[in-house]
Length: 240
Image: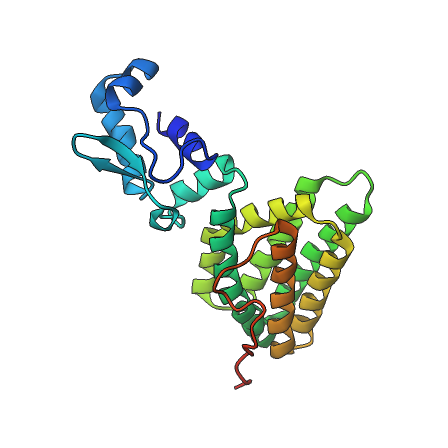
């Protein structure tokens, strides 16, 4: 039942402020007792997705209340989320505020092995794009691996672990933007410039290149990133 409601909420059938079916109706629909219904609803409550309102039922909470870094929530997001501009905008704004710094740090600290991992992911992206029979899902997998490799190239255990937690959220944007991109060659070139800036140990260039990659993602998705740094005059901090 929790899976059913998660799919209905993440796909947009239930929107924030909507009430999900009452316990008695869910118990009848799934042929389970009400204690089992409450147990499944508790999963969604603990994930910040719904709230129980005494005497009224269970209501979907606003997106910003969802615990999107909870492993269960990220799994639901990856499996069930329909293209949702509000969720996409929040994820993109976060990535715009974080990933330029990650790229800049990677340019300072990446090891030879890190550079190989980034290059192998990029080569996979290029190969799948050039292959007329290429698999779009496989291309997206290489794209995701490219960004995860940059997180790991910071040589910081927190960023490295965070890349695994963020992977579903990053995947959600990458898969959607790759499907809607009108100029995949330009996107590939932006990724190449980011890779080259990291390989050249050029932190400021890496910072700008990461911004350009994410600007392309925003354009492909047709969304504004909100209050992130895209389009501002904000500059990377000076090299230490």
